[in-house]
Image: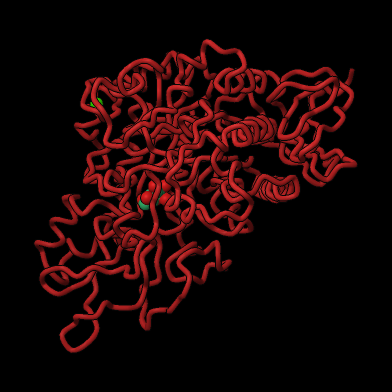
Length: 559
Ligand code: GLC
Ligand code: CA
């Protein structure tokens, strides 16, 4: 670890990071998430694929990112967009082959971009050979012990073993033909592994080595807080499925149990045996104070900080989210990970256009309209937000399409939805397809240049205005802003420290960074004075020395 502590000049001062060190590349990285099905299609079947990504290396290079994180591309039943893995060490034929994967790694590395892959250890697909074997082998068999099978309650065992819900439905158990039940946090297509089983542990270590040997630089660990479960009887009853809603202390039967870190200590030892060491970021929906357990020096390297996914467009809320996570970074020694959007939530350009407190699902269900009426507010705020985010110490995780300023495709025809959330919740939650619609590359080409064949998730007509070619021709486009901001950040980003500057206006967030630069964001509705300094970049036009509403500017610290 190239971390050393610097004297604290402010309460939010954090560890010093050696950004030059390749061991620590991830600590201040800009990571770009690719959802492979919707990025670029190379063979006209309407499904994005690995060769499609290879064909866009130039685009990724111009964006200036440090790493790509690929959502699952493994053989899968596609019951949950690939988060139901049937073979952890292969490529789904719809995405390509292992040779295509090697080509992708080589092509990215050749231009200095690292690659992270998604590891899905909590559950497999129902199609995984181990689950097929478990069903065939029957109750009490070693095959069944790799998953979580139990007898049911009631005279004939027809009631589930307990009352645990699943994320997407009232029941976390599904019954199989011989009468036993298996546990699944998510859909019945995603049976949970039994992490007390030694074979399961060995299998994942094998999988980690397999991808690390192929040149993968890091892993994003799906549902990292869920692997270890307390299955002892009597089963604990709980009412909320989300530990975010009920802060835990490691005592919840299914989430965030302390023993999970023993698994990650083993993985870290594997990562450290590589040169440069491999890394991992945890997707762990845990209360802030528990994050350092995941983002640690002997466990996973980082954990996602999802606070900004739930933060309204408000200076006070942003300041709280930023301060909280800088404090966490300080105590864990692992710089924070900032996220505005990902494949699981409504795109932030749409969120910022909605009135505060809007129920996102209700809005999706009600939405029959295109985003044109909300465009300008959502767009300016999204532009201001990314500049604020890129000015923060730590790493920034971007989601494909946000660099185009894409809005959520809110009015997808429900008959075309692919996300299991829609069916599992009996049509009460519309799900996550609105942020998974294929990217628009060329305004005047069929399917906007995504593919010669149409995707099941229909691209709306307004995507033409957001197409890459249209934005490349426009210096004031959101794509141009992302490119400029990422490139400038690379020159400016230094030690992991931020100092707040007090402002007279409560709608303004202003901070300085080491190396002589500062960032200021106006969340209010009227222009405010700019601080002294030379303007380096702004998210929108400035007005006679004033910072307009919904705008961020970066400036030098002195005139
Ligand atoms: C994670 C993924 C999400 C998936 C779930 C189950 O939360 O981000 O897309 O549905 O895990 O694997
Ligand atoms: Ca394809």
